[in-house]
Image (cartoon, rainbow, N blue to C red; front, side, top):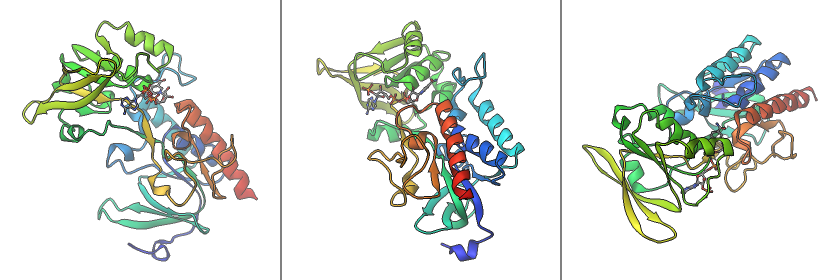
Length: 331
Ligand code: NAP
């Protein structure tokens, strides 16, 4: 690992870590305020490190204001990036692994994509954290075994694969993600079993209604997945389930299982540096503002929002973080 003295170019004024709606909106505001922001967008080496974040896997965003007929998630993120860059945001494809916020200027490390080694990247006067959140899995050993063999947490990425076409599939969860994934998969699948551990969906009424009225979606209530079954040649062939009311076990035949059971904030690299809550969300020190427990470090979007987690609320938080950073830098 190299030292920061070795890495050091001039200290950056404002670094934005993350490039979802929160990060790009912060960049738009910061650039227009002449803060010369640098966006560290992610190196794209895995799903969680992808520039653009979760919306890169959302086919149709219908609730982002300004788009009468909805907008493709990738297109929306590309547009936000262009808008941020038009005002002077500089973008680099780095994935941040470590920070030191104990003294100023703040220090930031990343993974060198050629060597794979962690190395000092830069120092910064102020930082906005907008690293979003990543999909959760059930935690079954068989989930790992059948990764890329029928287990997924992203219908938009994987739903069109040949292995899923005209097959029975399973989606686990009862929130907006689950009904969205299930609805999306009906484009390709013969039917989709929507397995939920309770007897009522948590999803918004309009999306739940749409899913439950889709003839290809079969709700399976009060049920949990105990194991994924299959073999190496065929991949997933079904899921072993347990009904929580009757305590009876059964198997649902399916060629794929999509986990849609929520997300975990991408804040592991912040542990010990700023205050996080029990689930890892960044604690905003001043209620409705974007201040964290460290002066000069601000947070926005899903990494700091256990409640709303919408693209538009993340964008709003990004705007607030840039304005807070501007005021703090001016002081
Ligand atoms: P969520 O709302 O937290 O829902 C997670 C679901 O998974 C819940 O139904 C939960 O069950 C279930 N679950 C959690 N852990 C489980 C486990 N270990 N085993 C089985 N089931 C489990 O997460 P989300 O659906 O990803 O949505 C997150 C946020 O994004 C929400 O605010 C949502 O509105 C938003 N979102 C919006 C859209 C859209 O508007 N287009 C699309 C996707 C997401 P319980 O219900 O029993 O807790």
